[in-house]
Image (cartoon, rainbow, N blue to C red; front, side, top):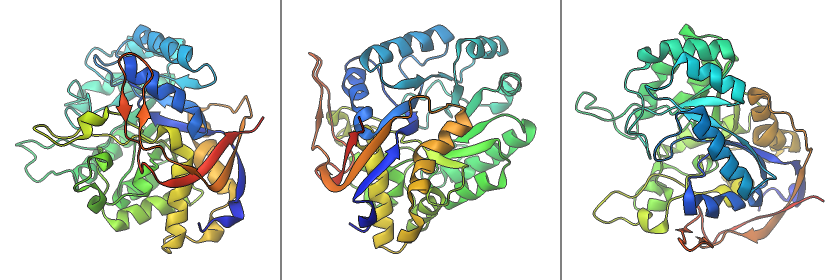
Length: 363
């Protein structure tokens, strides 16, 4: 491994600002793996079935999550839906809900209830700006008969004018462009003011589109793009610019739903048990291939991208001051994460069977 200077690396606990924890048996399987990945704060996505559209649903969901893992701080979100009103926003603020997530209709898992027309939500966005609640954007436009030239490779690029308009119309609204996958997305975020940031996933730091073709376990939305796009993501993550921070978009699916058959494989890459380790592996790969310089990967850079920058944007203080310790090359990614309930769920993690960093919590 190229980052031997970090043979034993101590860092603040990571904060993951984009996770899918599902519900039921899948939730019971996934939630116990959060701390295995060195994470003690997660921002939970609301695209359950049915979606989380009321404050009470979000609070009930948080209670189920906390019962499974009380040592994780769960930040909750609502699903942007026609039933969301300015009154909902005010209620959410009072209840401590962190943000509202926008899914364009039909672009990804459980997004059929998503947004068709952003203008119709302007009263909601205005109240979010007043209440200082975060707007999280899945930044793609859907393919349709009216968007004949839109594919998975340019759906993110086609969305970027919407990001620019929302930022122009609501300049104080905190906006996160989720799971950036392209150089143009990085540039668009850089062109916005300080109220706009972006998350970068662990798997997009590894993958290009060629890795996705023929491998359902690499398929997610938005899909990985060109080698130049991956390089742009790596450079943004390693830049020390606080606009870019970690959000894994870890999205578990039963192993059987990732197997190609009569239906398309489910969109999602599962990295939760190895979230921090997978980021370090990506930086190592990038240094070995000359995309990054080893000297640029410092403890301060890693703690910023993995924890400090996101906490600052979301205003989540590091109250517990927990630390993690990583050891180079001493870990291995499981071939399968197996559920323990009667409704057992098996999940294939990203890079299953690969060597990675060993991680433990400092006591």
